[in-house]
Amino acid sequence: MTAVSALADLIERFTGGDGALKTAIPRLSLFAARQPSAPTHVLYQPALCIVARGSKQVISGEALHVYDPARYLIVSIDVPVTGQVTEAPYASLRLDLDPHLLAALILETDAGPAPAMPMPGIAVGTLTAEMIDAMTRLVRLLDSPPDIAALAPLAEREILYRLLRGDQGARLRQIAAGEGRMRQINRAIAWIKENYTAPLSIEALAAIACMSPSALHLHFKQVTAMSPLQFQKQIRLQEARRLILAEASDAASAGHAVGYESPSQFSREYRRLFGAPPVRDIARLKAAPAVLAVD
Image 1 (tube, rainbow, N blue to C red):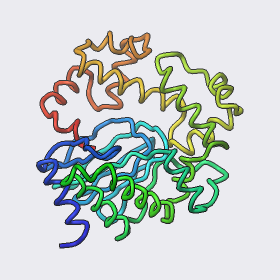
Image 2: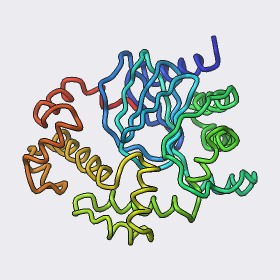
Image 3: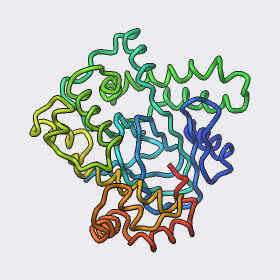
């Protein structure tokens, strides 16, 4: 049995082979599925995502990323994506990235400066034997809960160290950067997330980010693979879908709640993103709820 197969077996044991588990280890979640999934639309936050069995693809804007037991996914920003499990059985994990832990480790290890210019916020890197070993030791701590408080931070620190020294280390340094273009783009992203129901003025957003409108548009798309308006639209539509599914809102009310003035425009854009009008889409989700649980 290979090391990555052993990690997959652990994940399947703790999840029961199907579903999601937010573990007792801070920032660590496990996922498993017995079948490939339909596309799911979620907001990713900075995280390391590892597939130990099967494969998955993630689309951000027009950029497609595929990861599997040989390649991990690194996310350095908050960004709406479309994800799909393409090969099953599937076993994966997500370790949310803490910028404070990263910043402290960068200072201690002299990992180098953050990139001068923003890099795309999602990328695929090579999964090494050392990373698999550290991640397996972290997951195994679920078998000994009394050890988690003392030993999980050590394993997490090693994982972050391996990432910083690996082929996507520059993206991690970008997460911890306190200034520069990436900081400005993150300021724009945060504003859109907090004010997605409001009309979006590129000029006003550029002022918030302390950039010119042209620089904002250029660097925002470079990082997220979409324009600020496209980013806002995906945030709005994902929230509207949640309102309809979880709070039983009707489509018109949900559209109005997220900032749409025209029901027809809302229905048209909803169908374009999710592949079906609201009523049919929600009926499909309720018939296959496991789709929503797979990271």
